[in-house]
Length: 323
Image 1 (cartoon, rainbow, N blue to C red):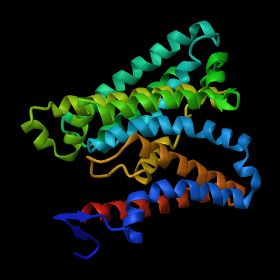
Image 2 (image 1 turned 45 degrees about the vertical axis):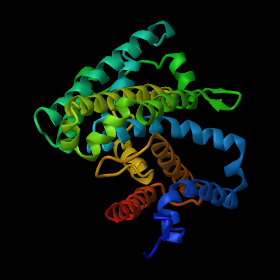
Image 3 (image 1 turned 60 degrees about the vertical axis):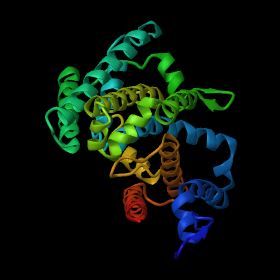
């Protein structure tokens, strides 16, 4: 009975420091980091800086939401950064005029669908490990991208995409509004729909899913498809934020999105996670990176901090899973 109190035949939750941190640690970490940033520099919590933080959060958060779906079904998607770069190259593959934006979006989404289907097919039908399958598609995308651009992408990002990636409406970034819409849709699908329940069942125990008549392969393929399409959207937004394109736009987002999901309590073992957790984890990663810069620590130290964060998060939550 240690760590809990039995009341009327039920077990009341423990309110020890360990249990509180296990349940609410992520939710408490973000406001504490914001307070810490404000203590280090009052400019950190100014409306202007918080608005700029939202600009930086949106592309990674969009990728992290897709990554969270894949992780819930016991997978990983290492191709998201390469998909972002491919979408960014597509953004400049047409003339830099706004009338080409529908064609740019349609082409980027078509590539995203193709990559997602390929990833899902390799993982489910060919039984390739998610790591190797998505690593292979990452390399394929890099190869096609370099062939298409001859190693030197050129062209201009259309004004609409630049506005979407870096513009603001009364201080609120447009890309944050896109993130909000996508987050609401995905949260409803994941947590309030029959398909969302299937995702958790497949991630928790694929055998149980099959016994319940769930097409586990189809559910997994859809998750990979959504992840690639969200990466394509994030790539278009990031191209507008950066304002120029090279073959490595979005580099590192595959690892950052995994770190954000782990910090946001998306289980590495599958079957557990939330859209809100992915968003919170992303915000924590971006805020930490911003505070490191404010402290004058070399940017390279961010890699060390990310490594420490993911090790601690994984240790805490895997230990919780065992109990």
